[in-house]
Length: 277
Image 1 (cartoon, helix red, strand yellow):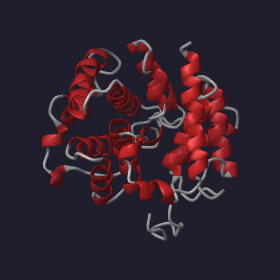
Image 2: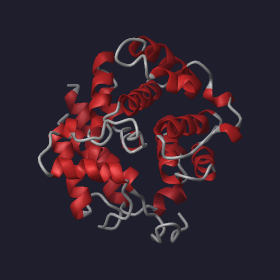
Image 3: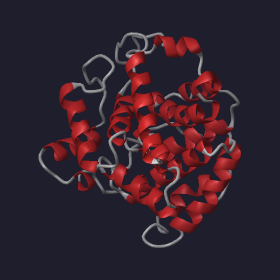
Image 4: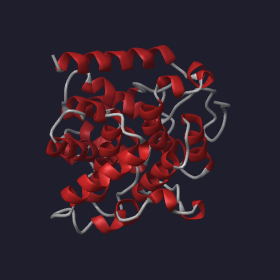
């Protein structure tokens, strides 16, 4: 909001997290279509589509490689890297809009779509599972659970889903989230790196340890390191719970392309209403 920080962008700018979330939101407004979503990712990278100021200034190496794969004709669901070293937060940071589409779908469909949307840029099971966990919490918040209840409800569903092959061998990486209460971990043991586990833990910690949207987002920023993504992860969930009126008006008014964002949100909302008729 102050501007001219790490990437020397003007106040109100947003980065790849938001751009790719907007791409997903707009794609879902026309239904669930991974080919369409992949095309929008390519347009963002190549043409600045859904960027704050018409130009991409921040993109991770793994995401860039995956989008180049899509551009070259690779099936979007096979475009993301699936080796263990490719477990950054680049799919987790952008997946939130999917929760609204999946709210009333069967549990198996919720996990299947969460995994598929992750795979466009990150195909390793760990990244897929992080997205599955995050979407479960988001769906619970949409259903008007408070953050702690949404978190606890997620644990029950995730243990059932991921307690079997091929996921069970990866479940140990999520122990601090699933087998414990991440909100009770002291702040000095919370990492805010770009590693998908660190990012998910940090985002949930901020959500569960604060009681307003503003405090949640500021606590995420103040953890340091990958500040835009941790804030997107925490702020996305906080936005569902505290709703539009809970976001500081000065923050909304400062946003680049504010009217475009509001129009996109309304378009998505209308598409979801129509799909339930």
